[in-house]
Length: 231
Image (spheres, rainbow, N blue to C red):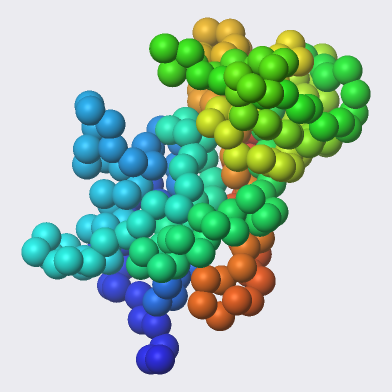
């Protein structure tokens, strides 16, 4: 196989910093505010659209495209992986639950323990909002492990191991503890002093490459604003 050569810088997508790329996968650091995939209202300003345009090198007639492996919430920043083929996508999705995924978050208040694992079953209501239920027949198992890294009177900075990957999982579990993620308009308070965004960031990912089968680790630096809040 020929060594991989990235397209020229002029084709690099805005809002996505490319951290790694080869013939099979692309790993990017996504900014907060960018959708992973399109909605009824937004089609072009998404990671999928921008990365597909990138692999097509601006040629709209090209049949090249990326394949979405997983998603980050619109307001969540950090590591996002896409595949360049259906085969790579299938392998990564089949193995996804076994990969190590770490997040950092700033939450409101102080958690009851400095380190713990939160477990519940998550269900979704008609308004597409997730919530915890005690009955395993009514929801999907969700497990979130956290460790308090730093705290102040108002906020706590957490390192989080995502042990399962349910929709809005971290946000729901933190809200369940009475400590919603700062800037979370859906599960927390509408406004919080100093918070200009949802303070949730995918910071570390360890996966197995779909074809070489080598273990690979990637990191996306925590936004400086997170630590500034927890003084």
